[in-house]
Image 1: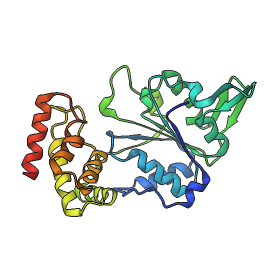
Image 2 (image 1 turned 60 degrees about the vertical axis):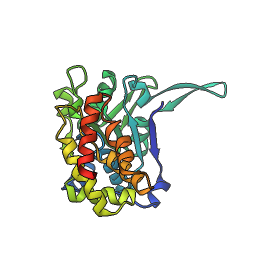
Image 3 (image 1 turned 135 degrees about the vertical axis):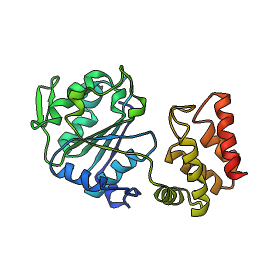
Image 4 (image 1 turned 180 degrees about the vertical axis):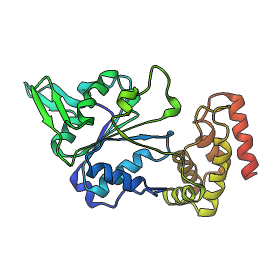
Length: 271
């Protein structure tokens, strides 16, 4: 069961994961949790969805089970399977089952990447039943009040073979994420990288120019995450153009013409 991360109770004693709110998303998350409603987050890659969930799980004091979904992820990866341990065959809970048993938050990142049988498992948990059937063990688990299911995906990458059916989407309370407003994004980049605010402002202005290329030359605009990477390298002493090439050019495209266009935009900003 790879690509699965968990946060235990002792982690909550540490400082909350940094997150800068841009609207009422924290209040909505709390209300969804309190009312036992599943939550769907929609937004571009690197805009803060995963950090937001980590922040809210720590704020609510609940263990977080994060699953990075992929093509090979099956329902058994989430619910559990029998494994040979010490010469004996034992049932081992998957992250979704653990979250239900322990009363935690299960976060499925990029849920549309998972196989179709995954969404079938989620359906009984996303209505008033809040049940998780475990066919292999014969158990029928009822989710406690402090269990919450959160899923996310990037609508910009959706196509007919990888999309959430309306019947699945309508089981969730949903909110859209986007890149933060410039002032907030400057604060985030400065805090995360240690680079001075005014120098981060130039990077954020550059990001706005590069994001305008989305849908023309780029499939996806530069993420806040990449801006933090760039600022971190600059703060460590790397020349600006070298840092920008490594974080704002190479990760965004393999096309040489597109890369040249990105470099020209960067040089126009920094000289």
